[in-house]
Length: 194
Image 1 (tube, rainbow, N blue to C red):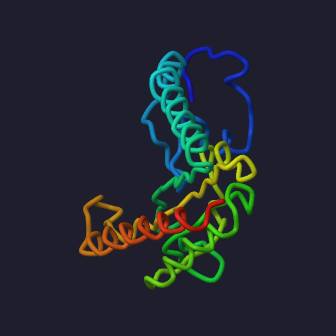
Image 2: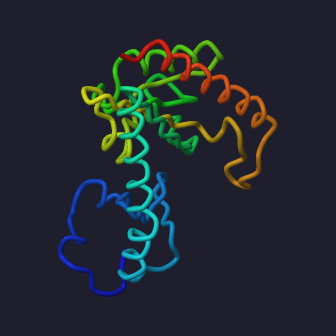
């Protein structure tokens, strides 16, 4: 990943790091490298200092504020997945994959509500395979403390041509459906939280 020296803590080996999916990923999900060349370790530190750390400090403060003022908070962590990953789901291709850390990051009612809303719109929805929730979902999803987190992976084939990166005719209907999903999540928050 780096062309110069990096300290021992930055050389920690984990399954995610070895797959190129660490804090600063070097690979995309389909196994292609992101960068044409290695980075300097100082550039990685700068990214962490100026982007990663402030983002998570701000997000943690917002969530803590909501739990203090409202008693609970819901974090929806949306991502897009390559259609090739969506096709590897058990039983066929998925339009959406909902990740709750296999039941750890949100109460069953939230994931069931989101799954039901998407299914009612005609989408094929899977849970946790191959995406069960990444760093953000796992870090903030603590239902016992009032924090619920749900990762939503959206199949890119629903809205774009993956080769050209151009929007397709399906983009507008998906945007409309995502707005409907946002309203459904807000309705759950008004009635489904403690």
